[in-house]
Image 1: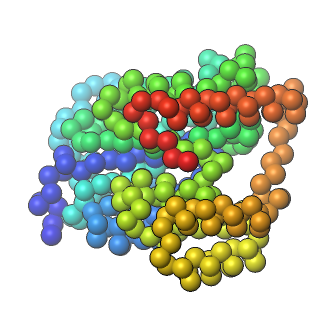
Image 2: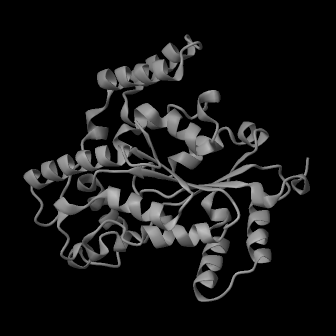
Image 3: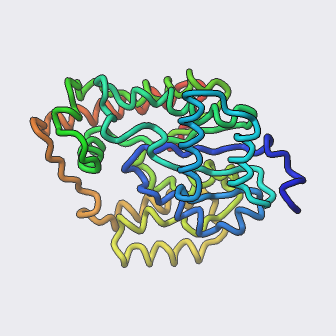
Length: 300
C-alpha cells in the first residue's frame, strides 16, 4: 500500500516536547526497537536528525512570511516517504525552548505556548497531540544550566524566585495556544514504573502492544541481579495485565534500586537543602494541580 492511499492531512502528529533531561532521548530508542511492528500498525518514529533542519527552516519562514500548503505537505511527505502511515512521532526537548532561556522572565519556559503553536501551525489541518514529561525543578535546573555554555549562572537564573516555578503554567500556556490539541503529562520521577504506559500513549496503541523497550528506564536504576530477576519473572508470567506488571516493576524497584543512580548531587550558587526540599514540595503540589486540569491526560 503506498502513501497515495493515505490522505496526508489525516496523519496525526504526536509531539514529544520534553522536558529536557527527562528521558534523554530514550523514548525514541525504546520505540525504535519495535520500528517495523509499529509501522505495520501505521505508527512511524523518526530520528530528530532526519527532520529538525527542514522543520526549523519552515518555522523560521512561517514567522516572517506565508508558508504555502504545498510546502507543508512537502515536509510531511518527506517524513512519510511512501509508507502507509496514520501517526508520526516527533520528539525534541528543544520544542519547549532553548535550555539557556529556560528561566527567562523568572518562569519556566515562558515561550512554551508560542513555540508549540509555531510547531502546530506547520500542520494546521492535521490532528496534533503534545506529550510532556515533567521533572522537579530542584533536580532539573542544575543539569539544564550545565548543558548550556552561553550564559553565566546570574544570566541564566536572573531574579527567579525558585519557589514560584510552576509546570502548571507551562501546561496552561500550551493548552491556550493550541486549542483542540490533547496534552498528555507525566512526572519523570515515575517513568521507571509507567514507561510502557508512556510508550503506549505516545504511539497511540495504548496497552494493546507489548514494547520490547518496556524495561529500558528500569534497567538504568536497578542492580544487574535485580534486573535479571525482574525480566525472568515477567517472562514467566505472560498473562499479567499492564496494571499487574506495573506493580511488579514498582516492587522490584523498591527492593533492587541502585542508590548511586538515584541520588543526585545539587550544587548551585546560593542553594541550600532547605530550598531543595521546599521546591520539591511545591513541585508535588503543582503536579497534583495538573493531574486535575481539564483536557490533560495525566499518567501516574
